[in-house]
Image (cartoon, rainbow, N blue to C red; front, side, top):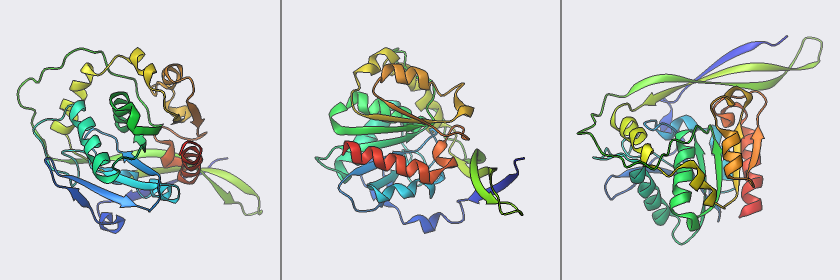
Amino acid sequence: MKFKYTLLLVFASCSCCLSQASFLKSHPQLAYWKLGNHSDVLIVLHGGPGVDHQYLRPELDGLDKFATVIYYDQRGCGKSERADSYTWQDHVEDLRRIIHTLSPKKKIFLAGSSWGSLLAILYSYTYPDAVKGLILSGTVRWPGQGIPFTRQGEVKYKIPRTQLMHEKSLVKNSGADGATRMDTISISKLVEVQSGAPNTETMMSLISAPISDSLSRIRMPIILFNGPMSRKFDWVDHYLALFPAAELHTFEVAGHDPWFSDPKRFAQTCGDFIFKHR
């Protein structure tokens, strides 16, 4: 018999303890956070679009055992400055600015969650010589159709709202008889979502991204993470066909974000991947 627990982690009240932000000064100013001091550099790309990076922490902080970890809030999100445009190309160029400033003349690893996985792929497609490897979780169907995108007037920026992000995990517990059992824990995080421009225009612009078949030109090492609860929409089978050398790691009790369910296993698997392809 499995028992269910609920854990609510509210980051709004403790974000200051997750280190202070630094800023890239050119427009838009981008807030970033740097952990660790290793020769290998891993840049973490948060989901959304329109969510700041905090929901990834502290779970992904464990990656700083293997690489210098850099988080940043994408344009219009969290502590970063709002902008006049939010196309996927804008996000790619922002990431290029982050890389050129914080890891000049050095190839980096990218770790993307959800929309962040799309951004990681888009960056690697655009600048293939800049990336050592991709760590992708919470993948979604590829939206690119190669159709030109035209802005339809001004996209309004709405007031941020909050929502709960849910995930499940397995934990070991000792019963009254001393026996060890595996119990299911339901985990929730309160996430601030910047609705409006950072989300709407980015998603609309993805129609102009390259078609999926063209992604096969991406040749760097790739590791994919998923869970059985996400198989219906994570498009993993298609990504494996496009990237035949990619590794797939399925976490037994996990949904859209496997790193959320078992951060230690996720970090160690990523660490092995980084060490192998450094």
